Amino acid sequence: MATRTGSETRDQSTASGYSLEISLHAVELPVSYLSTLLRVVQAAIREVARNGEGTRQAFSQQAQPILLMSMNSGAETLSLRFHFADPTSDVSLDQISEQSFYALMERFLDYVKGRPQRDLWGESTTGGVSMDFGTEVERRIDQVCRELRRISKATVRFREHTLVIEGDRLEVL
Image (cartoon, rainbow, N blue to C red; front, side, top):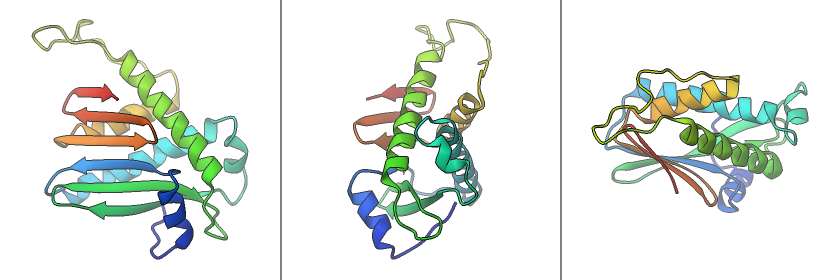
């Protein structure tokens, strides 16, 4: 994952709604947690992009799109914004970002729908059944959700799609 500063194309992409935003609601975060989170987020985004009909070709070339990140921090929130850019010119690849992040949010929705429901006492209604991952993308989505559950509250947002994670509670808004 590349992080660059001062890029006009990055700011344009972020401002125009082609970025995925992950907000972490915490006062302090262990560096090891943030490192792991960035690694699993990047892997999930790239896996979704590699498998998308409209994005697969861009990721089969020698010079693949790079994933850029910008950060914003508030009193108790760290916001990470991601988008893809051309590896040689740093020009934002809005169409690839849009298609990849839309597909990622759809995968999050599928993940939430596929999770077992809890009964009145908080126990899984399906018992101790572990989730079976049919694809690498599903496994990556699970990794992201597991990492996001480790902090008090996290929000994943792309345009009108929002996923809120608070402990074991996952909610699609």
